[in-house]
Image (cartoon, rainbow, N blue to C red):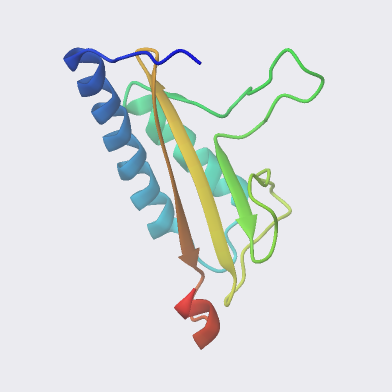
Length: 129
């Protein structure tokens, strides 16, 4: 296994990519509410990413394969396994727990993070999670 060391400039660009990820995830969290589809959140994330001068890292992942990933976000509701595909049919409802994974590419370098967002009020066990 080869380890590649990053230059100070590359580390700075990675930091900038991470700042975009954090900013977009904050906006996605603010927009998460009952009745919103996971596709709407995905479209918000993509729009904000492009306006920030970056590209969504996940969109088109494994593009050479038969099923490239279609979204900018990975969205999973409740007990779904991670890396769910955003959909207009998947509308959030009060009490749901939404897992959001998101990454960007900025000048060839990546930033990536995930958050868990309660939709409205959630039960005590879910809140503890």
